Length: 133
Ligand code: RET
Image 1: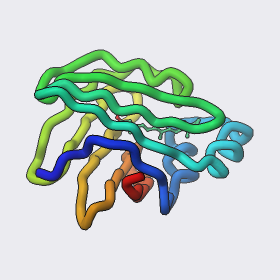
Image 2: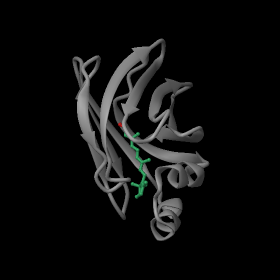
Image 3: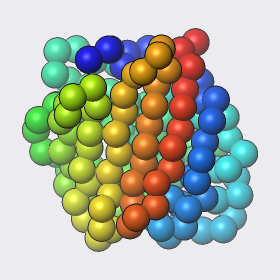
Image 4: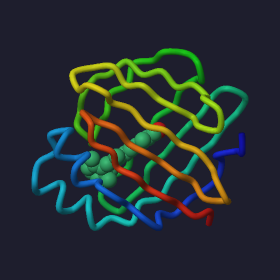
């Protein structure tokens, strides 16, 4: 699959609101989050990844090894503890986040030079697209 590495700027963001409601994010934080111009910075060395979500309000960083379950605390998002596992499935880097929320996870992939991200929680899907800087 195409490399996810690089710095990416958001160009579309569908249903972040529904995803945040499903995660139990407060109305005040949701209002701020909806206005943010998000940036992703993705680094990879062999099977080790670092994915940074960057904004003026809050940043979130997660690092993991593909194929190896890890403990993730979603600090500054919904502040939950999940057991996460990230695997390549075809062209998609897919994460399952097992915890209190059902059907929770995400998928990242590159198609036509754009980074696509789907975020899943309790049946809600947020779809984001990013352009390489
Ligand atoms: C913001 C603002 C504060 C509230 C919430 C946010 C959402 C962040 C998300 C991050 C997803 C990160 C992923 C990392 C993967 O490796 C915008 C930081 C809830 C949805 C998928």
